[in-house]
Amino acid sequence: MRIGVIAIQGDVSEHVESLERALAERGATAEIVTIKHKGIVPTCDGLVFPGGESTTLGRLILREGIDEEIKQAKEKGVPILGTCAGMILLARAGDSQVEKTHQYLLGLMDIRVNRNSFGRQFESFEIDLDVSVLDSPYNAVFIRAPAILEAGENVKVLASIDDKIVAAEQDNVLALAFHPELTEDMRIHQYFLDKLFC
Amino acid sequence: MELEKLRHGTELIKRGFAKMQKGGVIMDVTTPEEAKIAEEAGAVAVMALHAVPSDIRKEGGVARMADPQVTADIIASVTIPVMAKARIGHFVEAEILQALGSDMIDESEVLTPADEEFHIDKTQFTVPFVCGARNLGEALRRINEGAAMIRTKGEAGTGDVREAVRHMKQILGEIRTLQGMTKEELIMAARDIEAPIELVMETAQMQRLPVVNFAAGGIATPADAALMMRLGADGVFVGSGIFKAEKPEVMAKAIVEAVNNYNNPEVLAEVSKGIGAGMKGISVDSIPEDQVLQTRGW
Image (cartoon, rainbow over all chains, first blue to last red; front, side, top):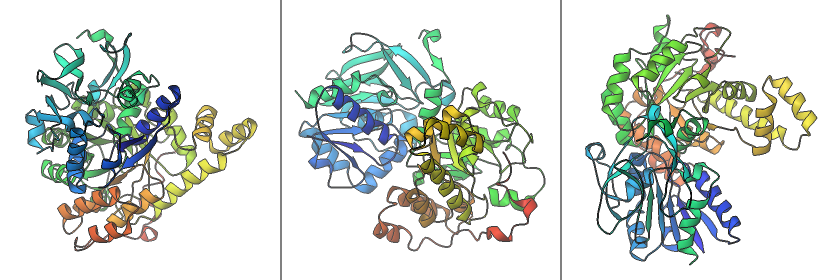
């Protein structure tokens, strides 16, 4: 078992540490690798997109040429987790802010996203969030977070704040507007790992 | 949305914001056009200023927070985070920058200090702060005041990377010396470097600063940026190095690529070719003592 964390920019080490902790919790082992360049994605059984700046991440994924490898992994059914900037990259379409920067999108999920949906850093927040697949609220950290404005019928909504969808999945792809890698509660990472260890 | 359920400005959110910048390049810009060039090149954030540090150095006089109009225009022009500088101790400038919507405030020695004794109490703000440091004691004092990110001071506006190297090695070297110390030795070390014991213990145990640690102050080329990453920086700030270069667009892209490929000399060679001249710069030892910026702050 091999899990790759896209390591172009962002909070990569936090995701690596969270995966290690979550694996230890369930008594499982897997190799965790960081991905900066071509050739590693096809060897992975699971993929994680960290938080970071989506504009930067999108540009560099293209420049490094790993975009096609990620699309192929999705087709093969490899479980993929995207947090914050990762959610934006997974989307099919974005709002005018996303378009303005010619943001590159992988289009792996039938969702339309809105960048900085809750405002600037001043308005970033923590909230006890109800997530449909968890039995009690989850302390979710939103940092200049995006949100899903529209989701296709094949998309399963897992959590919302008012009319904004903040967690969703479609087939093997899980997208979150918040950062489970910044807190000690491993339930979201476990939910993702369930897809690999089923 | 039930607003009372939202918790803003927590330590987790402030430090989390800084973590999202890791592996990235933060560029100094003075106009919306420059900000767009930076965003296009792949900068993770921009620092809004009225003049880059090398010009601030030349101008002399009192260097203050940039005109709020400049900051507001830059904020309106890009989707990446916008940071801005306040004078050391000038909490009102910081409040203004927060009100403008700046995503992070740099309490910076590049500007003329407003307080010779106290830094800003950064815990009182909703937005996170980044502060400069030359050694571990300085870094931990700033973190204790609420800084969510540390950067080396280096010597801004020079294009001479040696001070940034010195400060990064100093901080990381001091952290290494804490390894294996007993509690009583750590208490003594905390007293020596004038830093809170809790933070010294946390740093000793983690073997890194408790917050993200960037390099800044004199980075002028892709090789400089890669050097700082190799020394252990989480990311880099580039001030005058981009818009004082011969071809800013090309230099900006090359520095972003260098940070992403910092341990690959072949790629570094490739991205460093044909990018035009770097900023002219001034050697640090030619600067008169009263014009040295890194000794501001304590």
